[in-house]
Image 1 (tube, rainbow over the protein chains, first blue to last red):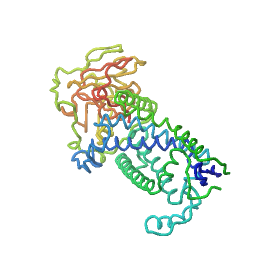
Image 2: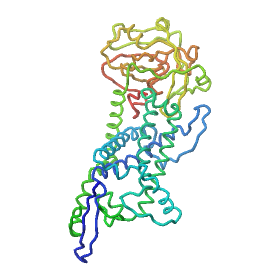
Image 3: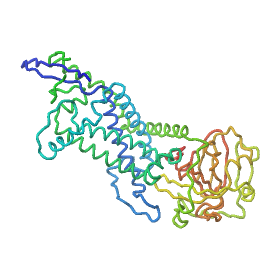
Amino acid sequence: MATRAIAIEDVKTGEATEAVYEHPLVVRLCHWVNAVALFVMVGSGLQIFRAFPSFGAKIPQKDLLNWPRAFALGGWLGGALQWHLTFMWIYIATGLLYIGYQIFSGNYQQVLFVRRDLPGVWPMVRHYFLFGPKPPTREAYNPLQKHAYTSAIALGALSVLTGFAVWKPVQFSWLAWMMGGFHWARLWHFLIMWAMLAFVFGHLVMVVLHGWNNFVSMLTGWKKDPEYRSE
Amino acid sequence: MSSRTDSRKFKAISRRELLKLAPVVALGAFAIPRLQKPLLKTGLGFSDWASARLFRSGHLAPTFAESDLTPFDKYPINDYDVDDPQVDFDKWTLTVTGEVQKPGDYTLAQIQALPKFTQNTRHVCVEGWDVIGRFGGVRLSDFLRMIGADPTARFVTVECADDYYESLDMITAVHPQSLLCYEMYGRPLTREHGAPLRLSIPTKIGYKQAKYLTDLKVSHVLGKAGYWEDQGYSEFYGL
C-alpha cells in the first residue's frame, strides 16, 4: 500500500523533515471512542462483578476477590448495568466500523499479523526485553506490534462474544455451549478483560517510550520523522 | 509520493485533522450529571429494545438432567423484604383483572386442573450467580387462554403477597416454558420459595420470577414495570 507523505521545510531554520499519514480519520475516531468505551466497560464490569465476586456456587459462596469500589464505575449493580448495557453498543459499533473500514480500505495490512511477520517477532522481543540490537524498521508497525494489535482486536471480538453468552445464555445458548457452559462463559469474559488490560498496560508503556510524535500521530494522523522511510 | 510544504502549513493541516476528532468529545455528555441519567436510560432502553428483537418465541431455554440440579438446600431464597409473607393458604386466590373475558378470583385447584408441565431449567440472578432447579406447574399460556385474555394485549403484570410486583411482555408470557409454578423439586412450593404460586420463566432474569402471587393483570400498556425495574434495572431482561 502506498503511503501518503509530505516533505516539510521548517520556515525558520530551513531544515527538512518528513511526515507520513499513518492513521486515517475512521481509525483515529474508532480508537478514541473505543478507548473511552473500554474504560467504561471495564469499570462497570468490575462493579457488576462486585455483586457476586465468585465463579462457583452461590451456596456456599467462595469470594474470589473483594474488588475495591473506588476502581469501579456505576456505584451500584443497577447503575453499573446501565453503563455496561449502554456502552457495549458503542464498543461494538466502533469495533465493527473499525474492522469494516480496515478490510474495505485495505488498511488492514498495516496491523494484521500474518505468517510473513513471524520471523521478525523474536528479534523484536530481544530488542525490547533483552537489550538486543534494534532490527531495521520498514513499515509503520514492527512484527511484535502487529502481533499485539491483532491480538487486541481478537480479544475485543472475544469480549463481545463472551459477553453475549453471559447476557443472553438462552438466545445464544450455542455460544455459551461453545465456551463450556454459562459458568465458563462468565469466567472467559472476566479473563479476557484482564488480557485486554494487560495489552492496554503494554500499549501505554510503549506510547510513553516512543515519544511525542508517535502519540500525536493517533490524533492528527500524521507522524513526523518516522523511523521508516515512505515509499 | 512525496509532496512538499512548510512547517506552518503542516501545523495547519495537523490542527484541521485534530479538529475532525471533535465527535469523541460528545462522549463527555455522559460526565455531565444532568445528562447522565437520561442518556443511560436511553442506552438501557435501546438494550431492552434489542433484547425484545433477539427473543425467539420458538427457541427453548436449555433443560438439564436430574444430575445437574442444584441441591434443594443450596437453592438460594431471595426476596426484597421477607422470606415468608404469611399467606393464608385456605383463603388464597389469584385475582385476575384487565383485558380478560373472565376476570375474578381463581383457586389453586382451578389452576392445577390445567395440564401440568415439569422442567429442569436454569435460574440466572442479575448478580451473576445461577442455579438449576426443577419446576412444576401450568403453562402461563394455558392459564391466559382459560381466563380469556385478549390475545392482542401486550403485558402481563403480577402482584405478590409481599407487595413485590413484576411484569412480562406477552410474547414471553406465552412462551411454552413460561410457567405458573406450584411445585419445586417435585414437592409443593415451600413458603420461602413462593407458595402457593410463583412464576418460573426460564427465558427471563431472576428478579422476574415473582413469588407468592396474589394478582394477575393483562393490559395493553405497562404501568409499573417491576420492583427492581422501577429502581433502574432492565425492564425486559430476557436471557
